Length: 281
Image 1 (cartoon, rainbow, N blue to C red):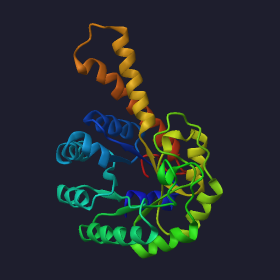
Image 2 (cartoon, one colour; image 1 turned 45 degrees about the vertical axis):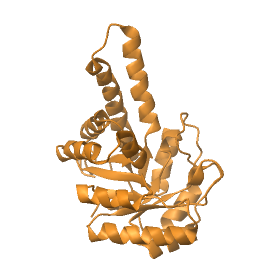
Image 3 (cartoon, rainbow, N blue to C red; image 1 turned 180 degrees about the vertical axis):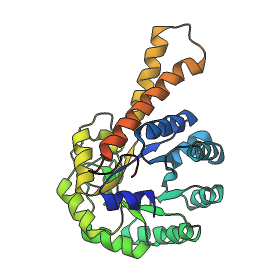
């Protein structure tokens, strides 16, 4: 049983945090170990483009995950390139998110089904995405929503193991002001037989995140929020002493800030159940 399936059965959420630098992977795992909870480390297609290749950042992230004291899943995020998915599978990625949500429903089903078959043949779960495409920000534009009946049919048609849904969040928000449709989340959780995923969670408050998990969301993706904490910590360090030139001197505070927030968010998303230890998700 996967980390997401276990969380869904226990009514908990799992934090999924994006890796851009190797220090992100180190910080994410440090936070997860402090919380005693499983975590997902995500490498997006944009991150791969930034590094110029998948293998170096994936190999480093896999090594960090391998040495983790808690379950740490390394996930290819927001890939819309089938060739990148194949390469990630060859290199040992633990799970894949394939995003054809910008295509028509019929094309999305066709492409996602083919990638699901590819992933399943390698023993790897696939996350897919469904939502009506918005004008500017795509699936996660304000007002865009995923229909429960369509979501159920989509999962059945594609064989996806988890589904990213549009319920009120938006990508790359720097303020936590998004308002989620909790009733829709509950309806989707009833209709869809696989774990639900929330993208754009950086713009969602603690209260809304906790409510979303109670309503049935399982995987919660957070990136921009952590990047903001990382950057502000680095800025404070450099502003305090202009003589600092060793990257280790200013990267470490950023890494600590991310680790602390990952620990806090994981505890928020997966509160301990009565009679069970938080270290037994």
